[in-house]
Amino acid sequence: MNALSEAPRFGATHEVVNQVPPLADYDMLASDPALRAAVEREGAGWHAEALARDGLALTRPEVLALADLANRHEPELSTHDARGERIDAIEFHPAWHSLLALLRREGLQALPFEAPKPGAMAARCAGYFLHGQLESGSLCPITMTFASIPVLQKEPALYATVRDALLSREHDPRDIPLSAGKRSMMIGMGMTEKQGGSDVRSNRTRAHATGTPGRGGEYRLIGHKWFFSAPQCDAHLVLARAGESDALSCFYVPRFTPEGSKNAVQVQRLKDKLGNRSNASSEVEFLDAYGVMIGDEGRGVPTIIEMANHTRLDCVIGSAALMRAALVQAIHHARHRSAFGAKLVDQPLMRNVLADLALESEAATVLFMRLAGAFETSAAADAAPEERAWRRLVTPAAKFWVCKRALEFTGEAMEVWGGNGYVESGPMARFYREAPVNSIWEGSGNVMCLDVLRAFERETDAAHALLASWHETAREHPSLGPALAALDEALKSDPATREASARRIVQQLVLTAQGVLLAKHAPAEVADAFIETRLGDARGETGRVYGTLPARFDHAGLIARAFAL
Image (cartoon, rainbow, N blue to C red; front, side, top):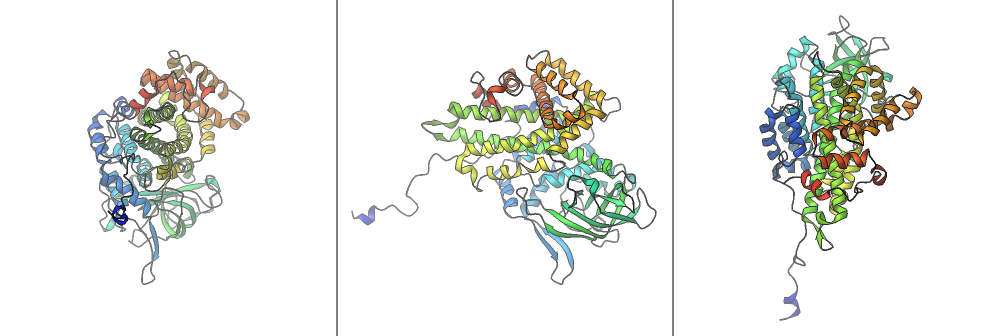
């Protein structure tokens, strides 16, 4: 045999082994014991069958591919058509519309309003959590549409014209007026301007009445918005100053005027963002744009804050979903990949990392589901004061903490994958790029912490009722008592000290809330490990780095529970 015949054929220099198969065709709901239990606990068991069906559908390979396609083929802005007419059209890859169709099919833009019944909010939040593990950008318009409904419901005449389109479970991608037969719609937000960002009270956009001024009146808006998400929505809620007033009012600004022409909201450019690339965010100018005042004149911030309270909860859920998605990918990888003679999942140090991540993920899950329940129960006239405190006090705290933890979490999970996690052919890089947005959107960390302090001052009775209920649980767990005592002491400090220490106080508040929930609802081994390492004696041993759990905890058991396939 000559040397030429012994040469390997092209592409066959080696055998491909020890590579991890793609994670697909698994049951999102069945493999997540913490979520399953929370669905029942928060009164949404009637929706479990729909969640199970959806959880299976979302892991099909062809559905998983939609997330990659929508993020690789980003939306494109066409300001003019071939004849030079201004159109401001946004073109999306078909995968984007497929993702929105999946979200609307499950009613995630309106479920508690479409089918108001006990547990509807928890049912919706659980479904949102499942979809958040698939793709993040498509959640943005769904969140804003959902959050706009309770605001618009207070404007009966306007709501009657949009109700059916808001509640529709069909995604209609056509860029046409509702009056032309569009079957569904999405709502966006326009709050921030160049000069102020989160300080919306520095806004300068003006609205001038064209008829009778005030609530329900028609106006023309002149100004700009620095972040206008998402520009293809059928209407936006925006803040502007009515007439010469210094007080902000809220306006409903449709994409098309009542006459059917494109409204004078000109898209200047799309934002080139770090993540959330499937979704379009923009800068716009109002050139005498048509709008209708909603809420009372000069009460724009309180009006739109009601919308923001719902979007903040979705930020928590979206970050928890990223954590869950990254966790299951990391565990799946470790169960299939071998190094140094053993599976990664069987190596003690890797088990420690995965177990620590599992604790963090479960704590985030029980927290957002408890908040979902509180959003529903606190609305009742006879609601217990602690339910109001969960919603008003703990929601911004959770938004601060869980969203920040997602950054560290996704980075650690990416490291489990090694170099394969750092390339765009897998999902880990996308998860990592998505993680920062929820900390920034709808109020940065400092804004959330200051909001918690304001809520504590304004809702003192509700806050004390909440802490009292936590003390009941703390009697059964020795480490929770000192943690609550430290929180009580911090909240009693003088206002200047509290503000300077706001991040530390809010961190303690969230960790205590998570510890209480796990002590009440999780297996003892989960609750003990979390409380001891986040609030108890082992806190000094662990620090901030994942993978520093004391050896006495059952690392393998925590991993097995986290992703129960």
